Image (cartoon, rainbow, N blue to C red; front, side, top):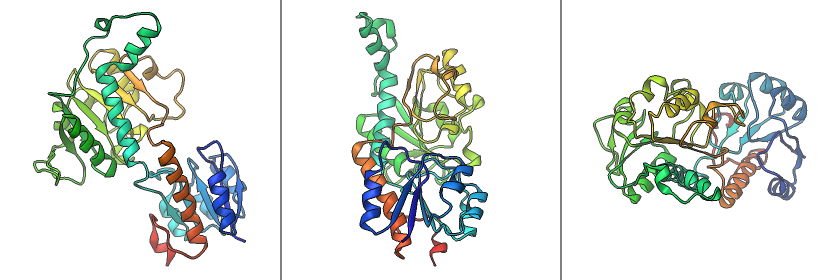
Amino acid sequence: MPKIVITDLDFEEQNIEKLMAKEAGMEIAVFQSRKAEDIIVNAADADGIITSYGDFPRKVFEALPRLKVVSRTGVGYDSIDLQAATDHGVAVCTHPGYGTEVVSDHAITLALDVLRRTNELDADMRKGLWNHHSRRPLGQVHGRTFGVVGMGEIGRAVARKAAGLGFKVICSSRSLKPGRRTPEGYEIYALDILLEIADVVSFHCALAPETHHLLNEERLKRMKPGAVVVNTSRGPIIDTIALARALEAGKLWGAGLDVFESEPLNPSHPILLAPHTVLTPHAAYWSEESGHELRTRTTKAVIDILAGRKPDDCLNPEVLA
């Protein structure tokens, strides 16, 4: 009987995964550690692994000769050594598209909350204060330019929704040539130019060496004093300490962040004290609907491979041959 091991999972229960494994005639075991050393021990007899945030360097694949597939509850795979997995014949599956609509919803929500100072006004009312003038300036959509950095599925969904609200939308992406327009009609700019002209800048990039601290201290200086920064992609895309300093100095309108360089966020991190911020705990991907889809697709990929079927999504399909 093939064995599936859940090394760690970002959900309170595992009912979906257990039911699917049972129906497929497969054994399943559940652990809760993302550390590579623990994964080696806990998944010693695993044929397939389901993980949320597990650390999978080369030594994990070297230590697990039975392993055929690692399926992650998400889109990114920066914690998985893809080349090492391929070298050891292990398929790596992520699940793009499951959170496109909800993450783009969240990015737009953060942008609007920061512009309208929604959280600050709410906090005032709960203290018995009825005075919106104390939170000025308050912004609006009309007349503002929304810059999307990274035009994958989520970036394009954010652009579509921002345009529908009335923003002028521009974009920047490593795969798009500045000076042209996207098929949807959005003007394409080099990143540094986009930062100079956009009133809202929303990041939707994959994390890679070239995107680490893509928004750093020098680039923050290029932005308008009335600009809003939004990040629902990966925390290390932004130098968050530099962002906190810029906010403290009054050099930005505000920031809406769902992801951070280290998670959970350290209670002493300066971004928690920075003014005009809306912060959420890496929740953009979650809705009841998207969560069910994600968990079902993640588990199905493992079951498909262990049953000899081709999965719907695989980063290194050459190992399936």
